[in-house]
Structure formats: C-alpha cells, structure tokens
Picture 1 (cartoon, rainbow, N blue to C red):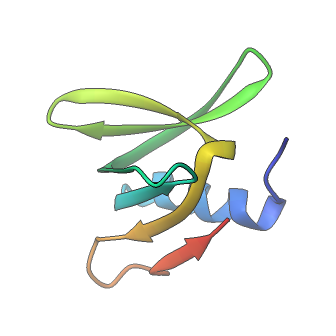
Picture 2: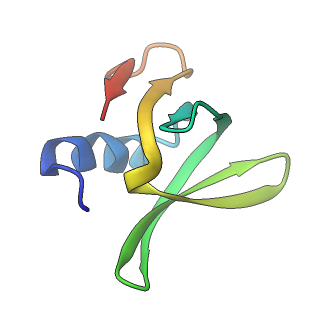
Length: 80
C-alpha cells in the first residue's frame, strides 16, 4: 500500500523545513518529534523523526494524520 504523491509532498516539506510534528496512527496511538528524513527499506517508505535524542522510523502507510506543531508553518494538518 502506498500513499498519494500529494501526501508524500507534505511529508517531504515537513522534513525539509524540520517541522516539529505530531503523528496520529491508524491504531489510535500518537508520537511527536522533529521530521528528519524519508528513507526506503524493504520496499517500504519510512518517516524518520527525532525526539529526546532518539530517532524513530515510522511506516508512512501507518500514519492517519500529520499535525505540524511548528508556529507559522506552510501547512498545519494533513489527513491520510
């Protein structure tokens, strides 16, 4: 399962600008951190976020909503 190019563009922008984000997952859980990069591994794409000096890899297909917490960002929220 892939996400649309438009949604992928929002994630890329969050990484380029280093936005602080809150991710809401399809299972209801949440995670916050700084968007760092998108990587591909095992035919899946992952968003790397950094929080408290730890880095987390999040499968893009597990994200239900991305909220930008950084003030004056180019966008504030995207639903997947």
